[in-house]
Amino acid sequence: MDTPPPARSSGFVGALCALGDGLLASVQDRLELVTIELQEEKLRLVQTMIGIGVTMLLGALALMFASLLLVGIYWETARIPVLVGLAVFYVVATVTAGIGLRRFLNRLPRPFEASADELNQDRECLRPKR
Image 1: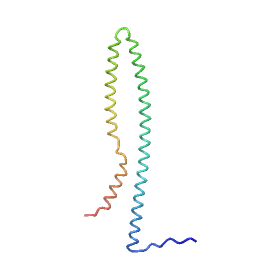
Image 2 (image 1 turned 45 degrees about the vertical axis):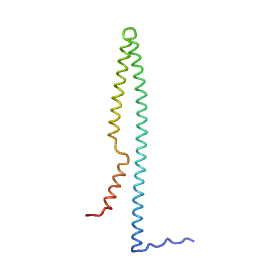
Image 3 (image 1 turned 120 degrees about the vertical axis):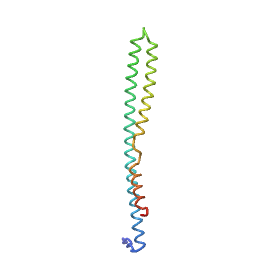
Image 4 (image 1 turned 90 degrees about the vertical axis):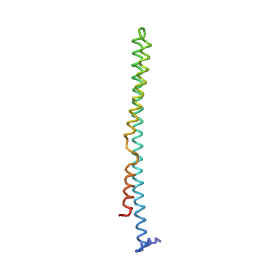
C-alpha cells in the first residue's frame, strides 16, 4: 500500500519547510555551477598542456637542427664562438619565455569566478537592508 505524502502544514512550520527547500535548491544550483566550472578548468588545463608539449617538442627539434647546422657550417673557422653564441641565445630565449609564461598565467581568469560572484550575490540578498 502506498501511503500519501504528509500534507504540508501552514504557518511557521510550512514557512520553515519552504525556507529549507529554497536554501537546498540554492545550494544545489551553486554546486552544479561549481561542477561545470571545474570541468571547464580541467578541459582548459588539458588543452594548455597539450599545446605546451607540442610547441616545446617542435621548438626543441628546430633549435637542435638549426644549432647543428650552424656548428657544422663554422666547424673549421669559429666553432667555439658559435657554440658560445648559441648558449647565450638559448639562455636569453629561456628567460624571455619564462617571463612571457608568467604574464600569461597572471592574465588568466580566477578559477570558479562565476561561483564566487553568485555566492556574493546570495549573501547580498540575505543581508538586512538599511
